[in-house]
Length: 452
Image (cartoon, rainbow, N blue to C red; front, side, top):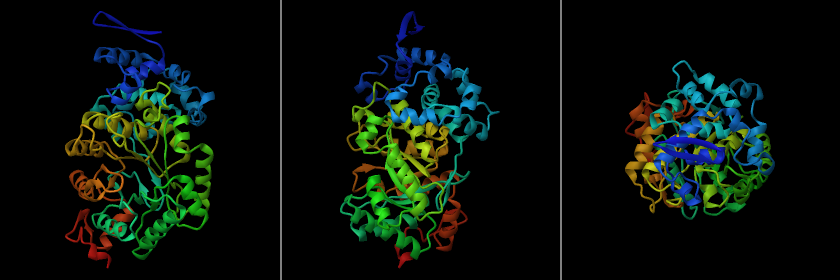
């Protein structure tokens, strides 16, 4: 039993899992699951208790038991025991101070991350304010390489997302050309298919690959079908540079997603053998707070901690990119703009401290209490914090998935405001095409006739 007195009231917490849940910032999904703090005072009491708990205590009390859950096993089996033992007696509060210290370098943070479980990373994020999360995220710069190199200082990438409600090839090509003409697509040209059949997915893969080859575009192609469909397409000779899958933070939730270590291992090995990119990082994962709650697969664990566990699971396969879409589900998990912004800042920090090349999609749905202003604030804050990439959606409104995301114009604005440039290889191509000069878009931006 853990206890804390605040304003003459005694607050008691039953377990590490209870403390982590009660110390979370307010989220509608945690409320729906019945695990959130009942008041701001209880939340503060939980944070005080959490700050004094040692990393060793958290290590010895995983929120989902090792023997019951594949995600827990992956996280623990991948921990560097030498580094963990160096820091095991630190409190969570001391870990926060170390991360935010001006003396602590990027290399220091990437080193200790190898000794941190996901629950430790979630815990320290709960003790951080928005400024703390931005400052800490800025310090962590994981990089990865597929056909382009993501995560380098001063670079900001985008996924060109030319979705079409009926997978119409002309519609996809038109959106793709528009995105490329605005400098979007250096992270990946990634299409969410309406038709998940092997034949349809293969057709889109061939189309995007052929376009990249014709115009000598240094990037990756990906069709975001289920990973088993992509594996079947790969076996039939479809050209895949980057293979995709959505992940969650518990085995039960991943079972619902139809994904497991065995399937991801197969994809990893298949891409190394048959993928079209140079690699070595050839996997693309998407995550987001709330999927486990919506699937009733949360085991009484808060959404933020489950999201951290998703990153601990993801890092096993050394992905090229991990994209967070915490506002994608709706108000039952993330209720309003304030919750979206907080979740995006938490997720960016937690992903980067796991050593992942982390992107953010500051998404919202039309039935949430959020709007374009909230999305733009989240985008600017996470860009300031060093997000590696964002989505590029025509008009910011995905016509196939029916949600709101960053547009090609938003992408260009974020680069311009912060003095950031495209990924190195892609910038050279943009300059050759006359789309960019000295890091700024030219008058040719948005002109699809470039590709005639």
